[in-house]
Image (cartoon, rainbow, N blue to C red):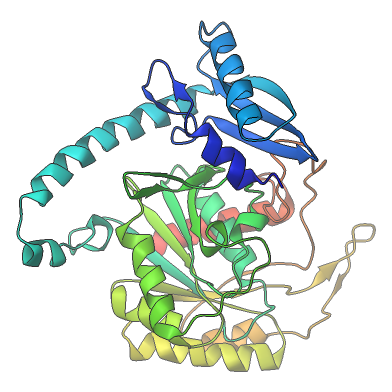
Length: 371
């Protein structure tokens, strides 16, 4: 049975003639669709009149037919100027990393063990923001991804780590279909809406359960810092699991400089359990940036009246209890993102000019002011 993984593995044998690397490693294979024994996919080119177009078509078709595909349909598209610059920068970084790796190889094992990932070094300029909640179902991940996109729209270089390892949802929320590329034991995150993303969801089969104990979870989280090439990042958003379990504790221990954003609904119970997550942040000396009250109200599209379906003032009371600020109240609703077939579709990202998108813009600017 054909799978996306089978196809990507096969296409690792097809080299881009100019860059001397395979199509998968360069993230030039997009939008793979499987219809029985028929495969449709998109190959990204540097220009519409690329001299390698037909050569690539023939090699991709031949390679996939050898892998068991009966019919292959190839669509071509062109990398944007931004994507071309990003790819050129990535190739430059890869070269630097190979040089660095050769230097590291000459060090003793003890020296190598003491290596700290650049992202976690004391002089790292990256600002870490952990998005936490006391319980599930309050929209914590929605807040995390929309904050990340809003920061990117403000011109910041942003990454997201989906640290909710049991309940990963960030790739689906952002409409990400491709997987990270791996080269020479280095993982390169997927980029969407100007945000670099890594998630446990990229490394397990669809809907497969993650049955791990705490130490394994902590190891996976460390790998997200140590084995992923993030490049230069201004803000790293961590979507934490709800509550105060192993992963949240690992984050607090690994990132003593991380700041925290608490998400709650107006309901008294949600705010009550969120206070425990806030207390953990205070106990571990993490700065709380403020509270986001999600699903604060429902606003009628016809008359504009607000209905407070889940109660009122839960976020305000939580902020007062933790001696912090209620930063924003996000209404209940879903983004109007048009046709799911569109290339820029995502289930959970609000448009920049939408009312809720503007609320996330305001939240991002407050976060920038506080950091």
